[in-house]
Length: 156
Image (cartoon, rainbow, N blue to C red):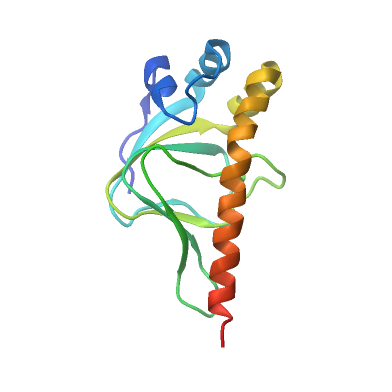
């Protein structure tokens, strides 16, 4: 279960390593759509198939990115921790989560509104390009981790 959502200021947002060095205008556009959330161990942060409305920056804790096959136990594809990010499904239609994310220990995240983020990417193309340039390697890492898990599951 998560605690209350609390507003986040520019200094806290700008301090996250994923956003360091991006322009102040870009970051200022994100502030009104960014909130801090705290999750207890075991809490589900997002569920596969639900609408993806946020991008998450992990401040502390650990998050398991999981697939939940219908006929098999929950499969943790990757774990991510402080200074990392998760939740890219807001970027591409149909904007639905493609996996579950669950807190593996007490976790604090900064949740950025996908609507605000998409608008900032459009309004600040140079920073948008830099942001996406940081996100693409994350996506590649997630695809590689998923591929390895699938290979392991189907190993004779």
